[in-house]
Length: 168
Image 1 (cartoon, rainbow, N blue to C red):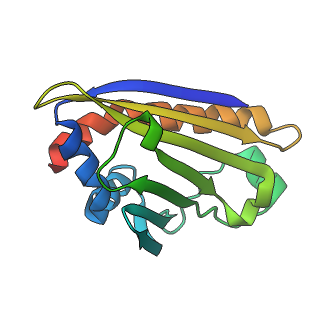
Image 2: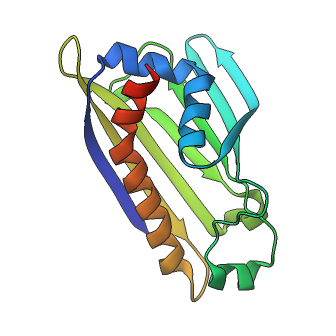
């Protein structure tokens, strides 16, 4: 198991940054920056709580799965489903966005769960706090896959504030 944590300063107010969560266009923009496309497969709003599941697709012929793992799994592409649940206007630690990533073709062998919230820092800045737990249960390749996923999340968290400001 690997834990990825980040506290990343952002040049938007906490309210502005959290408002981006409501905009699927921002989520699609982040996917595009990573060479993927995003498609909403489910969205539900109950009171002030929103749950959205997004399918991330890689371009045709691109398989991000490391070669040794492809040999174990076969040639099928991996299509992550990212489910986020968050409060529309509350963004503190007690109301953190809950994140779960599933890869249906891999079943329970990969678990990615996390949370993200925003700490206000003034009228034009905030800190994005992110925590993700990655567990890969695959004999012989689990550690390698966990390390790759950890690296991708670390890079995405470092780039997130700049991408948010560019999109805003």
